Image (cartoon, rainbow, N blue to C red; front, top):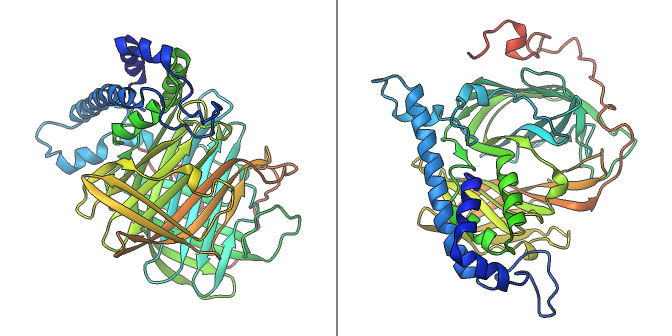
Length: 473
C-alpha cells in the first residue's frame, strides 16, 4: 500500500480521529460485544472511510507521479516513449529501479520470511490442458515449488514432492528448483519455463504419503510472451477498497504502524500472456500446446502465518478480458480486504473499487463447494462472476516445514455477466488447516537422472546467464 507513512501522519492529524478513537468499540463486535473473525462496519465507519479515501487517493496519486517522473528520466528525449515507457516503468512501487533489475531474482532481505517468487498459469482454449508453476526463493537455500499439469486425454500430473512444497534453491541467476526452471529473457516481454524430470501421475494427493506412486518422465519447454501491461498492486489498485478495509478496523497508533509496516515489506505485480511450447510425456507422442494465463512476481517479506485465509480468482475470458479478484484476511491489519483488477480487451486496466463478496460466505468452514458467485465493479462497469470448480482438478500444497497452511488450486470454468465464458482457477488458502509435518522437508527431493533420449542438453537446462549469455545491464 503506497505512502503509508504519509497516510499515518495525515490520519493522526485529523481532528476527527481523536473523537473516533475515544468512542469506537470493536467494529467486528456482535450483539454480545465479542469480536468476530472478519470486521464489519462499526461506529463512525462512513466517516472513517471517507477520510481514508481522501488520504489514500492523494498517496496513490503521488506515487504514480513519482513513477512517471522516474520513467521520463530513463527515456531519452525524442525516443517516442508511449508504449515503451509503460513497459519500462518499474513495478513494485520502486521508481528508482528499472524493469531489468526487478525482473531478475531479487536479493533476499535479511529476514526469516524473505521471499522472491514467480508464478505462472496457462490454460488452453481448445481442451482441458493446463499448467501451473511457481518457484519462491526462501532463505537458507530453500524454495517453495508448485508444479501441476493436466494434458487433455492423458491425465493429471504433479511433482513428486507434493503436497509438500519445499525443495532446494538451485540458482542465484534465475528461479530454479525441483527440476523446474523459470527465467526472464526480456523484461515484461518474454520468459522461459522448462522442466525435465519425473512427475507423479494423478489423482492429485491431498496428504503426504511415503509411497511414490506412478512416476512418469515428463519434459516441457515454453516461451511465455506478454499481451498486457503490468498491473502493480502498490500503484494501480483502487484506493477505495483499501479505504473500506481500513475503516472496518479499530483505529489506534499501533494499528497504523502495523499497516505501514505491512505495506512497505511486500510488493507484487502481474501480467497476462501466452505460452507456446511442447510437452512430451513418457509413453505418449510429443504435443504442441498454446496456453493463456497470468504471471506474477512477488518479493519482500511474506510470512504465511500472518494471513488467516484468502480466496483468489484468476480468470481469462473468451472476449479477451482478464481479471484478478482477491479477498484476504490479515488479522493484524485488515481482516476483510478486497483487491484486484480488470484488464479490458482494448488494453486498458482498472482496479476493482467495490465488491459484495464476503469471506464468511465463501468456504469459511473449509469445505470447498462446486459453485461460487461474486460481483464487483471496476472501470465504471459491473461484473457478475460465476465459478464452476472442476472436481477432478483440485491440487493441494502445504508447508511441510510447519505442517500448517494449505493452498487449494481449484481449476474452474467461469461465466461473466451470464454471457461471456472464461477459464482459470480459484485459489483458497487456510492458515490453520493442518496438513502433515514432513520429515526432512526441503531436502528429500533428489534431481532425477535424465534419460539418454532427452532432447534437453545440460546447457539447455541452465539459466541463460549461466552459460555465457550477456546479463542485462
